[in-house]
Length: 516
Ligand SMILES: Cc1cc2nc3c(=O)[nH]c(=O)nc-3n(C[C@H](O)[C@H](O)[C@H](O)COP(=O)(O)OP(=O)(O)OC[C@H]3O[C@@H](n4cnc5c(N)ncnc54)[C@H](O)[C@@H]3O)c2cc1C
Image (cartoon, protein in one colour):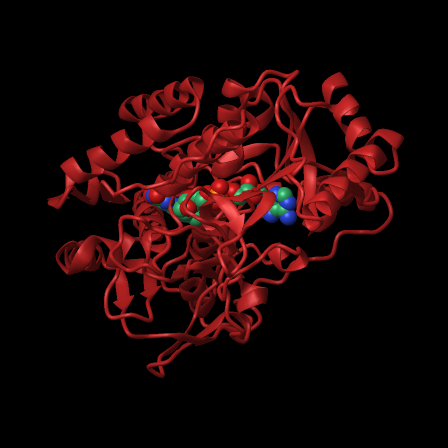
C-alpha cells in the first residue's frame, strides 16, 4: 500500500516530481532532435528509470517478473496497470466453465506474484508516448489521472472481434474472461433448471439451445467442455434427457481447429457430431435479434444462449495512442520487441509484445509473417521483453525473439482431446491428458498448479459440481425484494399454461401440477 502510494505520488503528473519526469523525457526528446546522444535513462546514470507496463496479462506478468529478476528496486521503478487485479490463464477457461477447475484457480494475483512492483487497478485510456505520458481511468468513478514514465511496455492484449450483426451485441456473450466463463456455466445450468420448470414447450426448446459462433480453439474447447457438463447435469433431471439439449457450432470456414490440420480437425468434428453437437460449416450468423438465430443457410431457430468466439482483434485503446500501428491495429515491433515506425526505426523507450503486437516471426519463410496470438508466444515474448529491457538499461544490445511452434493441444471435454506435437498426431484420452499436463505446467505460480491438481484429484472421488450460482449476477435482488415487501403486496403469478402457451410434454412443473 505504502509502495503504491509512493509510486503514485512519484508518477502523478500533478506532483512536482512527475513534472520533473515529464521534463526529463522532453529533454531527452529535444536532445535527440538535435542529433545528440540519447539521454535514455540507464542504470546508475542518474535518477531511477520508471517503467510503465500497460496490461497485467501474460506480457505484463512475465515482463515485470523478469525485469525484477534483473533489476533491484533501486535500479528501476516498475508499475503494472490493469483493470483486473489478476492475470487470467485463458486456456483453462473452458474447464472453469465446465466446473472441472474452480474459477479462482485459473487466475493469479498480480500483487502476490509481482513483489517489488506497484500494481495500479485501472484502465489505460490514452498514451502520449512523445510526452512519455499515459492516462489511467480508475475502475470506480474517480477521475482519470496522468502518469509519466521513461519506458513503456504495451501488453494490452486483444478483445473479441465482433461484427455488426443485428442482435449480437445485445444477446451474445464473449469467452475471453473468467467472468464470462463463470457466467456461461451459471447460465447453462440455470437454463436447465428453468427448462425443467416451464410449461411452455417452445420456451423449453429455446432454453435448451446453446449456440457457439466460431470453430477455433476457444469455441471448440468451450463447447466440448460445456456440452459435457450439461449432458452430465441432465442426469439430475427426470424431465430432461441428454437428447433434449441442442448444442450448435456456427463456423464460417469449411473446417474447425484449423491450427491442427484437416485430419485432427475432421476427427474433432466426428467426435462432437457423435455426441449430438450440430456443426454448421461454411455458415455465418446473419442475425440474432431477441434470440432468434438466423443463419446464412436460411435456417432459423431460437436460442437463449449465444456465445461469440469468432476471433480476436488488437485492443482498440491502441488507436488512442501515438504508437505506430499496422493495418490490423497492432503495435509494430521489431524482432527485439522494440516498437518501430513503418520504416523500421526504433521508437525509443517503447516496447510491445503478445496479442496486441505485430512481432515478426523469424521462423517463417515469409518476411511479412508475424507471430500468432497465442499464450505459447506471449509467455516467451514477455520473458524476452523483460530480458531485453533490462539489457538496454544495462547498456547492452537486446536479443531477437524467435520461437518455433512445438505443437498444439486441445480438449474436447472430459477424457477427450486432440493434439499435434512436433508433427505427431494424438487423439482421445492420451491427447486430453497431454492437454492437461501441458497447461498445468504452463500455469503461472506453483500454488496455482497445486490447486488445479487438487481440483482434478477431488473430481476423481466426487461427482461433478453442478450448482448454478446465476443469482450472483444480481446479488442485491433478495435485499431489494425484502426492502420492497414492506411497502406493497406481492403480485399473484400466472402460469404460462393458463395464458394459452403450448404445454411442454416433459416438465417438472407440469408433473408437480398433475399430482395436485
Ligand atoms: C478461451 C481461450 C482459450 C485459449 N487457449 C489457448 C491455448 O490453448 N493455447 C494458447 O497458446 N493460447 C490460447 N489462447 C490465447 C492466449 O490466451 C492469448 O494469446 C494470450 O492471453 C495473450 O497474452 P497477452 O498478454 O497479449 O494478452 P492478455 O493475456 O489478454 O492480457 C491483456 C491484459 O490487458 C488488460 N487490459 C485490457 N485493456 C486494458 C486497458 N485499457 N488498460 C490496462 N489494461 C488493460 C487485460 O485486463 C489483460 O489482463 C486462448 C485464448 C482464449 C480467449
